[in-house]
Image (cartoon, rainbow, N blue to C red; front, side, top):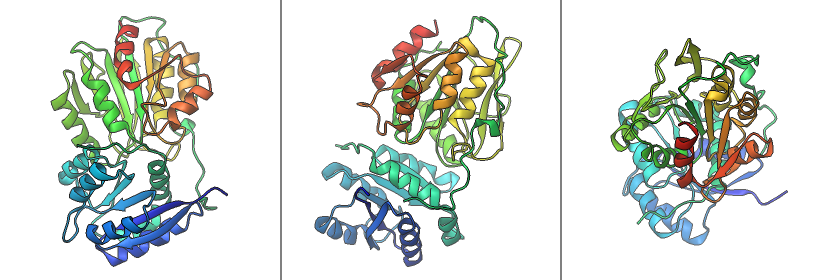
Length: 355
């Protein structure tokens, strides 16, 4: 077997350090090389042996996690997974963590943390594996009790398209995961005020998507908001699927809108890109443009093929500009993609395709 992924755990709670160590060690592809109660201790351990991935808390003595994250990324970038008790009101901290270079965010509750961590083994180990595959940017194991990996059938059965043959409006659907927050910012900032309506699934925690959408809304020419059930898909607006809710594109007459609802994990995610893309295949067909961006795994690949078969034109982010090339690569392998482009060229292509 190939070398294990070496993990350093940095958290001021002894209980959390031990629980995370147990969780990480339960996956035979991962290896805990050490734990630290604060960043200064962690820095000394990194000098002796650099980990492949760091799991980092935010609130710690002597130096907070964000300051340590900035230091790491400015001196010797190492993939970092932030694991902290971030509340809805504290999601700005998570946004800062992503800006400073964190690859993944895991939200742990203030109460019942030990139970949460034990129950979230797949979430945590998948985040570590995704981080290990990432390309951190400088800022100036296999478990037998894994539940079934559900497909989009769990939310929306595959049927013949109900899309109109041709409409005057195009709909852009986008899926992203690891590294997607910055990729989406770059993409959306380039779109003009009259860009076609957009629906986005970005894998991220519940309560975090609203802060993410609000931040993008201040940076982009188009408006950006967290999707709510029955929101109309409008020109000049992007709707971001809320964390822990599936979001589907629907059509009533010439009006496109979104349905936001509960449901099982699909491809281990909620929201799932496959669920959004299958709904786009059914209700938009050739009136849709699909974009799959950086991310680990294969969520979105199969349903993107359904989109192509229904007449949509699809774009994948290229390997060179992806933090993790998993999702785009899987879609390309299936023959679901028409154009493979670097991130900085995707917006221009989408604009031309949706004219």
